[in-house]
Image (cartoon, rainbow, N blue to C red; front, side, top):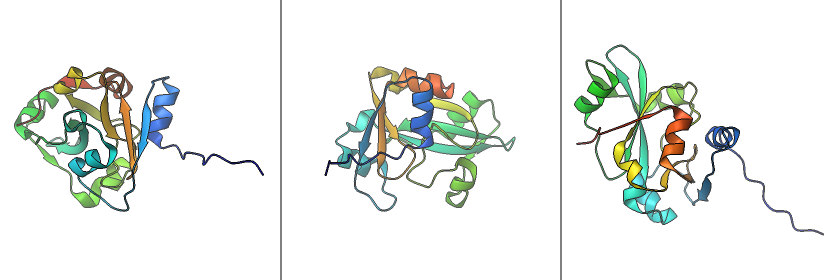
Length: 162
């Protein structure tokens, strides 16, 4: 009997990267439930400063936006609102994450959401050859070039943290 390699189940995020011929690396880690970004970085061995989390906010206009920031940082809602040309923005409720994005809390990737929302990546991502973001499910991280990520989601790179 031959050995069968376990087939990796692709997420929407991975499919988008492959469709756009964007190179990436998948890192799997053991996890049953939501853990924060710092714990994810520990589990994957990813440098904290190169690890980014995906946040979803809603503007006064009722539009949704995706913000990608370093895991150890906090979003500055006023700076982000200015960049997004919104009077104000607020984080969406945890109960709304799946409905808005198609992903679960802790597995929310900036790629492959239900709709393509305007996306802003913190400009520090450009300091690195590669960054780490959620792969679209808990237990999966993607390592890729930040400029490639920016092209895939048509993102702006701005200062949006405290």
